Length: 183
Image (cartoon, rainbow, N blue to C red):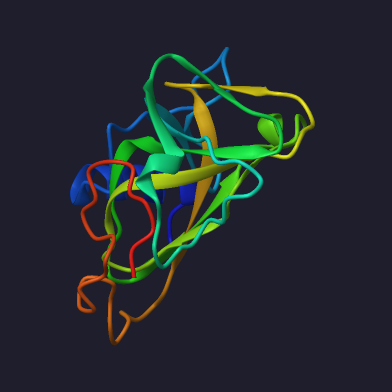
């Protein structure tokens, strides 16, 4: 990168619709979101799928049971103890062909036992990110819509990849809603 990382992200957001909507600075006081030094803190939208399975039920990624998830819409979401919920990013992303990203959970939540699955966004993937949010605590945990949930770190290559996510017709390409596992 010949420019500072935060300036590069801002330029990419403006010229390539990398992130929409885009906040040019870190927004506080809340669980922060927006442009950061080397990445971008994304927010949670206000729609969730809360896992409501019982101990005797098995989760199968090759055959997901939609009835195990309760759809919920709201400014806050309570995740039961030792369970999880799915959310989606408020921001829509379009990753360029020479970029790979990693998505890390925010430490504010991690310090409460709430863990966000680390997810790569491959070159030329686009869509709203489906975010798996686990509550590892023995008590319920609250998460907040329209506030930060994870940070995306951008890794730029000097060359474009041979095969992008779009070239592979990736199964999660251009997702517009929370998406359960697909095979």
